Length: 281
Image 1: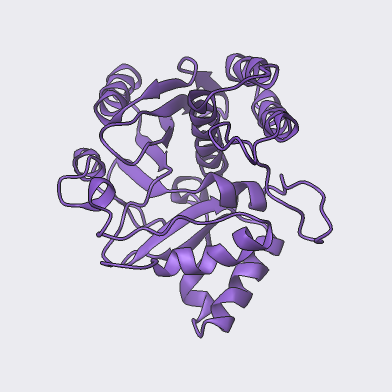
Image 2: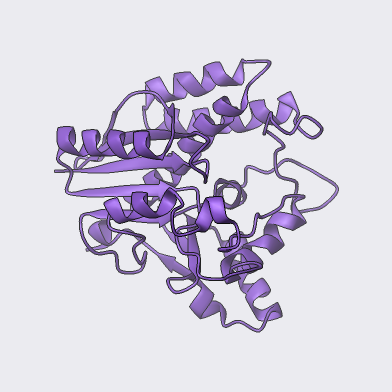
């Protein structure tokens, strides 16, 4: 009996590659690594996940996908982006809005939709069904939840600028900051090979975008680990218009609740705490 955990930082379009990372969470609480994070496009990610499923025969597969999985709006933001945009912008970050006018990302033929159909589609985190659960996550919001921000004149701190593709804002110190915290999180769970890869990435003085993609896949995987361990998680948004899943902390929950009230939304309907039902039951 085991759970297959997958972190998939997709590139949102068919012409670019993202990255994937995975492991098995065994019923005795230990983890089994499935190799190092690797660059993939959508077809390659699907092939790898199916291979892992065939090898492990997991009871449940949990895929944390860093890409919107429910997009019904034709323009502007989804409600979830409007909500999480507040804590993100407070820390000098930004949220890319998802809507169907972005044809390469969310049109009917976009690569995310056949990928989701292959694995049963996005499930309701509050009551997941079936044997494969695909959740949308967001590494930036996860870093806020995990308090991985850097000190700043603002009490909330600032988000790390660790995307090497954005040369004007990227700093090697911020890259090392994220790598160091991610390495510690994987070391804590004795995931030695993944931790060593992250440590080596942190020593790279000239990381590339593909390195950041693989690091973000590890961050998505870390969210899956928190969920699989039965820790409190947040579902921000709803199943009709889109949602994100990240670890739960009181501070972030309060911020998101305040944002809901400021935008005349009922926080109990838009920011909900939940746990992995397999652990809870």
